[in-house]
Image (cartoon, rainbow, N blue to C red; front, side, top):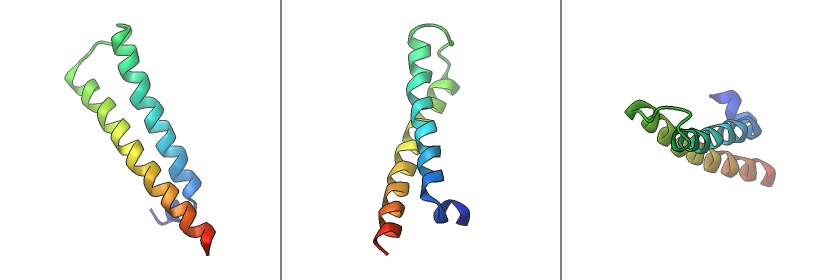
Length: 68
């Protein structure tokens, strides 16, 4: 975790990947490429929510490190 705090770009990249996954999974479920299961719906929501939180934390860390 300390490595992610030293480099907020890694945290922002992880957040971006999770947000894209949180958008693509429901899209594929609507297009009926993937079956809409409870686990997959929950995973898509969790990926989207955690990506948003990690992106917020990464942007705050980036601005905090750039001010110093």
